[in-house]
Image (spheres, rainbow, N blue to C red):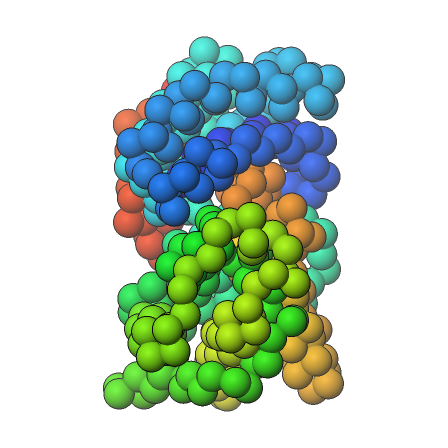
Length: 356
Ligand code: KG4
Ligand code: ZN
């Protein structure tokens, strides 16, 4: 089975061909980051227009790289949500039109489920049940994944996502967008104990996340210590970044990692867990990768991440997430609509048959 995956939920237009949910035959990602960087974050209307411009070319490139034609594709998988409505509409409209023309089934996939499945592209034998954390610029959610395709949400963020918190501080300090990779690169030059941030406790005892408090504390610290934003050219050379900023970045990143690990450790209690799986853009973070491995592997729990190009948005994860459903002969009807707030539990049932 060869699935064409299409992803256009935010600021990447991506297409991939995946064989049997496992082998990536080609994967093309057109990032809009340079365009949005000028605004310090994603501008939804610009994102939609850019998807319209790019989508045909990206899919053709994807077919060319795999040396395939439309006739080789068994089915199409497309991100249905969550994401930006205009951006989702571009991918869904293209996927439906193509599937209709080529007379093959299509399925709408939850973007978070795509991230969750990105683990299995490189680690098909990753043990289940797992604690599965999706941590990115738009999402921070923790699941108990009992078996493939069965997710119980344990907690989610009540305000900002972890990546969003990194992006916002970076923007404020003039360090550029997206902030996660910049902070990842600069933080090792700073002292992670120099600024004290606390791990938020949720009053009802839930394991929900919250990152807006530390963002406010960081802004307060900047004002109290008269720290001025930098010019981008300075941030690219860590020798020119003042030590108080490096210390703040190290402490901030470390406190975000503290919170992610705190929730993972607490979620272990009373649950059957054979592995820890961490996906999404922030799963590329060096400190998170190192500390999660150190802590859990010492306790006999393997920790899995996708390879780095599969942590951020891509279409191979969308194709991988669709394969089990398509093998079960499940497909979506032509009137399926994008859903910007799609919940993982709200993904379509496996039993529905494709109507063509
Ligand atoms: O998964 P993704 O491409 O998009 C969403 O679904 O949101 O994640 C993008 C996010 C951004 O917030 C970016 O700053 C963050 O992932 N990110 C990182 C790293 N690489 C990307 N955060 C921390 N460390 C990194 N190395
Ligand atoms: Zn994502």
